[in-house]
Image (cartoon, rainbow, N blue to C red; front, side):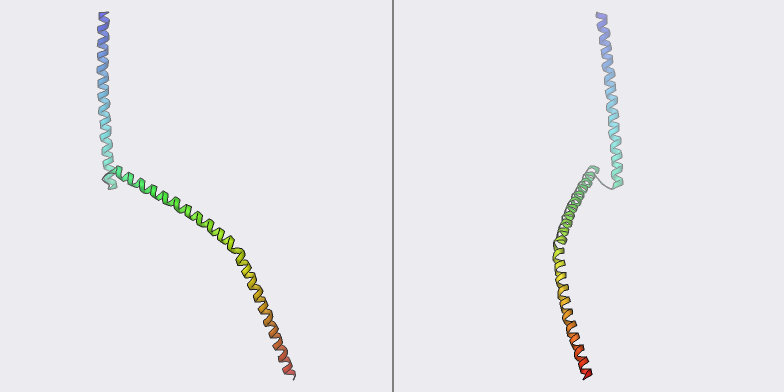
Length: 131
């Protein structure tokens, strides 16, 4: 059992060493990825002309949200105004038709009166010719 215990301890130590090496490699790769990402972000920041890419992204997102909120508000107001206009058009149409009909009757009465006066003048003119 002593020899087996030593072999197991040696295998365990070897496995721990291998795990530590793997963890160190993983940490190095992760740091390289972060450094590479930071370099890419720095390049993108320079291309966009901004100092802080995260702050720029937050600002753009805030502007986009504000724009969308204003757009939705505008669409809501426009819909309400369309509905109000339709209501006013429906409400005013019967009154406008009634007013127009009344005006037509008034105009027809005035035309009939003028036609009668004209006819009377023609008759008088005919009588004056004959006399």
